[in-house]
Length: 211
Length: 211
Image (cartoon, rainbow over all chains, first blue to last red; front, side):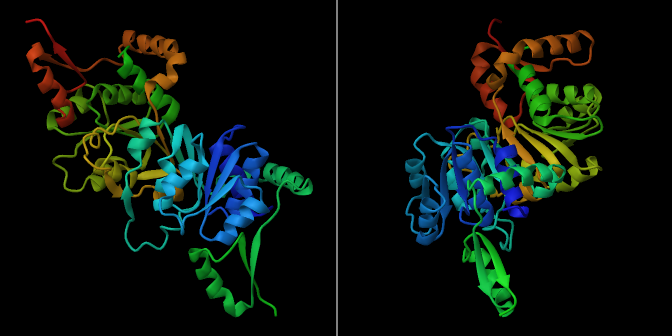
């Protein structure tokens, strides 16, 4: 949590998302290290938090252990947009996007006027051989006065000490905790790396080299 | 200039675009009432200003009368992205978008890190029968830390007096001027309305009802 993933969650959610108490935050890739931390910070800020994940185990972990208000499994959903609508009765104010693609299209349809989209990752599009195509988001961003902003954590490097100080306090107070998946054995590193793209990890993906 | 179009240009460029002296601003639909005013304000802010238009007459008007640094005619361009690159040797910092679609795709490819996209209009997409498809912009927004924001001028209504005061001074000082197209005869109103979508107007499209 005190490394790059925690700071990515911290600056993305707080600086780009600007959450207010009572707002609704949707997070894709929500069981990853960044998503899971972003959700916990959104709870500290008194928001309704809904995660989107790809397994029932992850959905249970987020709702049970990490106190998300709801978690949706996009892989078993027949109509993700409708499920998001049900899980977010007051609409979506902030979307913390780790994945891009059709999942993000479904969230965008449910966004409120003056909503904010935090582009943190687009993992569903990284391995696309051509420029990925999809519905143009601009008419919706325009008609609802939505902002969408990409960032990398190093944009905020002057403020890393601030983030470490605040995150440390939240860790000490038990308000946030780390989530990680440990793969045993250096020989499994390629498998672990490829697993990032299929969602094999929960939280930060780590490989333990020594037996 | 002191009506909605001037205020749209004012708040879009200044509040969402946040221009700094020496930056490069590209404007699509640049000969329209909003685009032409936005370009003049960007010149006041000491930016390089490049307009994109659909006729040679409009390009000449912007470069000659309105002192744009350059103007590109997308209808005669064989490679708009390359032409934008040549016209913007230091890249594009701010894109004031009135049109959407492939013109905007070409501008986006040329944007600098930390660039800002002002979504003011998407006139090329309004009459699309289905949800318009195109290249997904999110990977580029993410990798270059670009923000894209839609707005309507009424979001800023509390600050209309400020805009009127500043725009009036610029008008009085001869730093900006209005641009308009007057169509004679109420019977030509439908033609004038349809003309908005083919770019028949320069500046604000007005219909004079009395003979």
